[in-house]
Image (tube, rainbow, N blue to C red; front, top):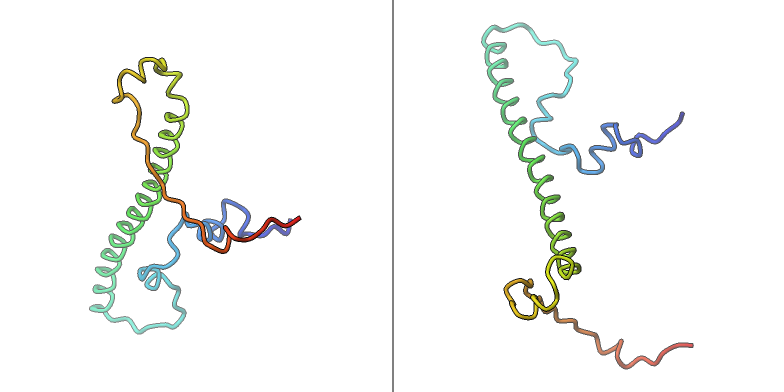
Amino acid sequence: MKRNPRKVKWTKAYRRLHGKDMTQDSTFEFERKRNRPERYDRNLAENTLKAIKKIDKISSDRQKHHISTRLNTGKVKKRKEARNELNQSIHMIKAPSALKEDSSLTLPKIKVKVSQTLAEENQPMEE
């Protein structure tokens, strides 16, 4: 169907492009396919099997960390949206008269300083 794999959500290319999967990790270097034949050596094979177990553990730990950091950003965003919604519709939960009497029911207001550049202030409006 000639679809672009970066736009199809279930492909590896999409997942890597949109930060769903890890893209750069030193453990990926060990998983590369090698086509050069090696002469069998018992010690080398034994050490390789030990290293594979260590690398699997390291990569799984890194994937868990990657997933947890991705989930944490979502939690922060949801909390922020919930707080904004609560600020906007607090009157539905408590009566306005109750809010005026008890200041602990309202969330504290945050003041933000907005600065304008001099160039914007002195420019006349264009028609």
